[in-house]
Length: 201
Image (cartoon, rainbow, N blue to C red; front, side):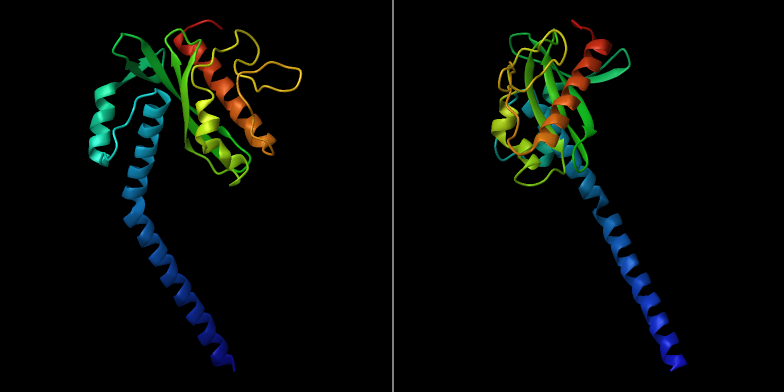
């Protein structure tokens, strides 16, 4: 009986070590692909936020080259921004944002005009909000309503429209916490950009 107990213990330890090794090997093997996918998500979000149309059917290599043809990384007072100059000479800045959502970090890109007064566009890189509720921030209708809005000059620069109060965009019904988190993250990121890059405060 005692020998059987030892056998079971050794067997469990061997199985645990084996499965741990398999999982570790899988992670090491897949890590480059995970990093590549994260990079593609980031540059796609930048292009979308800057309202740069991505041609259909592009390979990941072609997309990277397309991105490099349009975007220049600028360090402005110690603050990295991604600059895009349009055909008519307008300058837009893509600014990364990150903050806590309801179930994890929300990351993305918000693009502003050179005067930092108008939102060119916004897109998310990653989020872990509840599908069908907070996860709806990834839906086009939610993201596209930020495109072209004029920022308020004081207080919260972006505000949700609510009964009895003005606002530029609509929150997601039934996802108050996520909606509030997104607007807080965006406002904080824009205020930091205004401080570091310039523009009206």
